Length: 496
Image 1 (cartoon, rainbow, N blue to C red):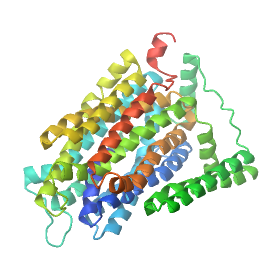
Image 2 (spheres, rainbow, N blue to C red; image 1 turned 60 degrees about the vertical axis):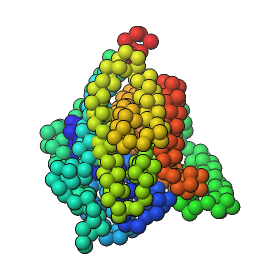
Image 3 (cartoon, helix red, strand yellow; image 1 turned 90 degrees about the vertical axis):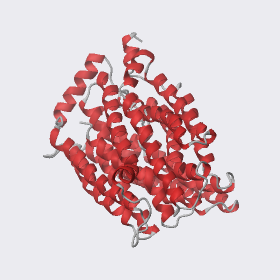
Image 4 (cartoon, one colour; image 1 turned 135 degrees about the vertical axis):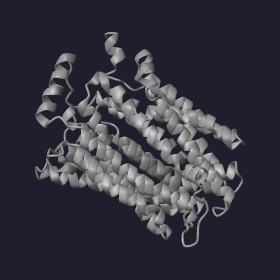
């Protein structure tokens, strides 16, 4: 059921470890890299709630979620093959946009798939299994350029007629094949409950537990959407003026544009509601957003600071390590490419460690609870990111990456295990898509402001962006304490 995530994360890991390198090779400056990465979170923000809502309401010969697994895999595999063959920077940026949209089409239903198919007491282990396959896929993909060079003598420097090194190009081609094959295996080897079976299954589970999901009292009336829309639009206009007044970088306008668009969508939703078109997908998503369960709201804040940290790491580890530890910014030099290859290996280490500890986290959670397990993991990961600054030996960077791996394993499992217990089954896909807002919004924020901060505040020293990410992860750990895990098996065991 979770094996397809091996392929999905294979693609994501190649993207995370190598896209900044590809952008720099094609001429991107260090402070412009974050805005080029904006494709990833923006596509996730748009695609995931749409796919979640659609998959909630799909049932055909392939099933409920599996049609989206297969469609996304086909598109993402093609984008992976093309990405390292991009002739110029704008083509690479556009391909990243397509690639990330396609990966999101496959990925979002996988989260809901576990919630659909497993009862409450098995979901922590179910999401841990996803973490295992995510870590396993990522460790191989992250180290693939290094493996191709050191085991198979594939060149690591650009060859005549190509700007991207052969080891990177072949890694992406292999990645496309692995992505599609792994997802296809899940599609072929699993079956899904029909809507009627799923309804009966979840009704029985609620009856056994003696619980039901409370009705949220938020009213989806047109005036509420109008008021909310105007507030968001005014906030966007105010932020636009402030950015202009302070002469900030152009990419920061992404934030104000996002506020304006969200406000406009609220007004449109109000018009649909006034016209009694409440079955419209936009109305459904925005209404459900307003009606989020309390546990989901608390987790949303934790996710915000966790994923800000991760995005800072994915964007700036290559630049931070090559400049701070290897002492070079020359993307054409052998030393830079040696450092960039080692970053891929380090990403492999943190993903590999995540795969190993994925099965230990549920055991720890049974003793202390899921939220305390998550809090400890985030603290260790945050300290790992901060400590990179103090290392000078590249080999020793494996140590902080083990801490990041623990946090990564927990981020991929604990929030989802906590979340699914607070959601109604018929809204699982939609709410998983909405939950993704609080993963991609911090990434958009990071893409908007980190370039400005690195250039204006950190004197182009990317290592400080990694430290900022570490402090953000520690703050997320503190906020976990305030989450109410309403479906925690430990609480049920103790009768509380």
